[in-house]
Each structure stands twice: as C-alpha cells, then as structure tokens.
Amino acid sequence: MPTPGDEHEDPMERLTPLSAAFLQAEDEDPTTSMAIASVAVFEGPAPTQAQLVAHVRGRLPLVPRYRQTVRQVPLDLAAPVWLDDPATDLDWHIRRTALPSPGSDAELHRLVSRVMSQRLDRRRPLWEYWVVEGLPDRRWAVIQKVHHCVVDGVSGTELYHVVFDSTPEPRMPVADDWVPRPHPGTVSLTARAAWDLVTAPLGGLRAAGSQLRSPTSLARRTAEAARGALALAGTVLPASSSTLSGPIGGQRRYTSTAVGFDEVRAIRAALPATVNDVALAAITGGFRHLLLSRGEEPAPHAVRTLVPVSVRLPGEEAIPDNRVSLMLPYLPVDLEDPVARLATVRERVARAAASREPEAGTTFTTVAGYQPFLPVALGVRLAFHVPQRQLVTVTTNVPGPREPVYALGRRCERIIPYVPIADRVRIGVAIFSYAGQLAFGITGDHDTVPDIEVLATGIRESAAELVTAAQQA
Image (cartoon, rainbow, N blue to C red; front, top):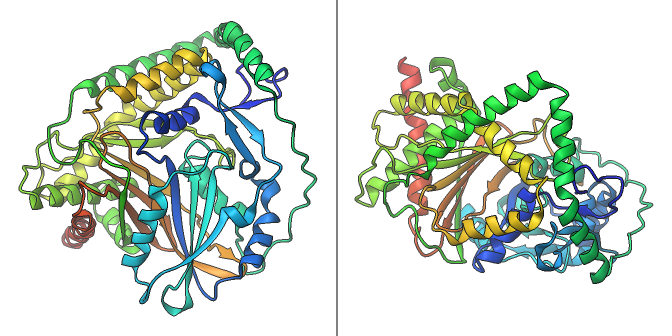
C-alpha cells in the first residue's frame, strides 16, 4: 500500500501495519504459520490438473496478489512491499493429493492439519491450492491456503466469487494484459524507505488537517475511540489460569463440526440473539465441556476470546487486505444453563460494541499507518516477546457465499474454515456459513490439545441444548 498521503509519488505498494504484523508474527515465532484457509468439498469427478490450472490462469488478472511476492525493507525502515512475480508457476501453487480409504472427515482433518502446519514459501506468492481426491462418492476438495497478510476472512471469502463461479457454466477467461513491474534494487528500496521515515509525520499532519476541517466529526470519533480504549484497557488483566493457554509447538490438530441453519433460525425465533450470538454461545458451551472433561473448574474469567470485527465499507469486500478491528469479551463458561449462556454472550457482545472497542482498534491501526514503520515494527516484536496471558482463544465468524459456488461445473457442497493460532493461544475456532450450515473449524496445538474432538462435541451438544430450550420456550 502506498505511504499515507503519498500515493501519487510512490510506485511501490506497501503492506498496511496490520498486514505486516502477520508476517512479523512468523518472524518472532519460528513455529508459527499465519496462513488462513478454507476447505471446499465439491461434487465429482475431480478436474484434471491441466483443467484446473487453465481455469485459475484465466482468473489471475482478478487476483493480483496471486502474482506478487513480499519483500521486506532493510532494517524495517518502511513496511514491506508487494513486488510482481513474473515467473508464477501455477503447477507449483496448485497441488494434488488423495485421502486414504475410506476418505472420511477424519482423514480430511488430518490432511488439513499437516498442510496448515507448514509455512508458505516467502520466495513465492503467498498462496497454495491443494486439490484433494479420494473423498466418498467421487467427491473432491480444495484447501485454499492464503497468508493472512494477503487477505482477511471477508476478502478471503470473496475469492470464491472471483476464482470460482456462481453457476454451473464457467465464465470465460479474463483478458490478461498484465506486465510485471521491474523490481527496485536494494539501494533504491532503502533510500525510498529512509525518505518515508523522515516524511511520515507529514502524512499524519495532513490527515489531522483534513479532520480539523470537520470538527464535529472529529470530536465524535475522538470520543468513540477514547471510550473504546478505556474498555480495551481492561484486557490487561490476565485470564484465569487453565490448560487452555500456554506455550505451543509448530504442529497443529484440526477438526470441524456443523450446525444446521434451520436450528439456528429456531433458536433465534424463540430467544433474542443474532447468528453470531448463537455461534459464540455454542462455542462457550464447547469450552465449558472441554474444561470439565479435563477436571478443571470453568471459572468466570477463564476464557477471553478475540472476536475480529470487519470494518470494511460496502463495496470493499474484494480488496485484498486486512480491514478488521476487534472485541475481547469473556465467554461465560461458568454458566451451566445454555439459555443463560446465550443471554450473557449477547449482553457482553452488545456491551463491547456499545463501548466502541472496535472503533478503538481501528483508530490504533489507522494511526499506525501514519507513523514511521520502524517503531511500529519494534512494537509488534515487543508484543510477541511479552507473554500474552490476557487472551485464551480466537473466535472468528465470516459469512460465506449466499449462493452456491461451482468449480468447472461441479457444485460446492460445503465449506469449512481454518484459523491460525500463535503465541500462547492453543485453540482457535472459525465459523463459516454456507449451503444451509454454520460450520465450525477448530484449530488446536498438536501437543497440548489431543482432546480437540471433545470441544467439537461440546459445540454440537451446546447447540442442541439451545434448540431444545427454544422448542420449550
């Protein structure tokens, strides 16, 4: 992304501070992979490698990041830059494998665990497609693996609309007149970064000047950010100690479960809640189930979750970038009654939104965009060197495609998501809606979460409890 306020002078596209932070997370922890993913299961038969490569090649002009690499600037004088890769090898990025018989979900989950435990090669564009054959009934799957610095959940979902089709009839290939830009030399890259280091404060002053031209709006945004910052300040208190957080290794476990949207609608019809509230309440019940199975007390402050919040404006869904803020509520795992858990989740999420926690996070990342990158990078490194005892899990909810998705005429039957974990977060849960299902993809540290299926079972049972309660309401 161009340096703020200097878009017309800088031909190099730089990463935003938030996107750069996902790269730095890997730099600070050699065991961490910060790729996100989804697994799409299609009707058979699987296309040939040549067919799929030709199909993706016909969409490449629509996904510029698939032909770009990341280059870091010496000494972190500026944010990393996106550089065109003239030799993108689709046969390298689109890989094929097969499940052992009988090709069950358990085998698919184990494959996802192995694929997602490995880092993407930074010498190449930061994405891979794994075509998986051997599923029952001639079905096949695609693991869409993309680095988190390239996309967030919303823009990652948009790739389904871009790379695949909304009808059984594939769209025609897109005309491709792309000419890769030459790479800057190290001296040029460093000199430009040094200049940015000096002039970055001017961009901040220009931004402040534009805000001052609308004092009413500025006052409102300042007040909202202050309220949110005060709310986020409470997160410095550590969560209660449990086996849910602590040091992790580099290998992952993965599983998934799903709840039908008919069940979610039944719950919403009887109990005031949003889809996100229902999903978080089911996850809360799952974590309670997991803690009890480990012989641990589900304390009121045992599970604080990071809930990403999209701050994209309408029409920005396809922009490849990270445009998210956050909320940090506690999940009420101490409550035995499923209806009380749902009501408490609803109240806490509403309170976090009302306190402007997402606005505060947005303000922080916006301000970082106008700062010299060196101190921003140092701040990220410091954050990863200080033990993070405030956060226990991440629970991200991304709406999937509303209409069926097709790949070369084959209908996509279901999509399950994958969220990366890092630092001391041993478990992450991603939620994805598609084809009448709310899918939960659960990532765990391999060595410390051998009982990941207990969490999946707890989520299903918690949702079933809410359905029963809704029927009796």
